[in-house]
Image (cartoon, rainbow, N blue to C red; front, side):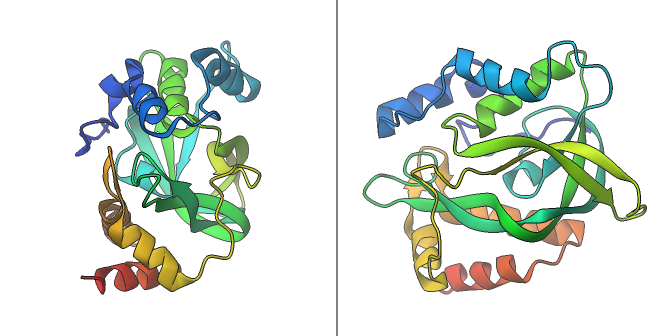
Length: 228
């Protein structure tokens, strides 16, 4: 499977490689939690070393399902335990603004989450992983982890996948936000990566195409679509 063509003019291989996304975040938001290239590299090396041998799998549960950016060669549907899909990350630049922030997905503590394990391919899988770090760990709002993934066709045999769980100590973490307020934020916010509404629409579409049922996403999708 080839990497997807991103509909956003900013979140793609070129803009990530050239640090244009990082520059946009710094210019628009002045976010002091944005990691430097050295910080991103140190974060990745803390989880996956430069000389790592073996297959590398990444867990997709939100936008990675429809815009992985990295090159992948295989994918398997299954579930992780201990975390669930939640709109809990406030965005003031990519899908929102400081005056009108949006919300994007994170993996928050508790429950489980059905998604896709994606096998990283390419001549240099570590390079692909570094590209992913620039996409996911730009402002340290997530904690990168290796966790167990249980494939639908073999629940008893788990494989390790790289995933990014919510950093609950980050200033952008949103806790206990009522559904109507979440829907309002998603329906009305826009950033340099596009409308927050589109982020939800693409995620909802990807889950439907994969046959993944998520009542929470369905509820928030219909709440957002009810906004004019």
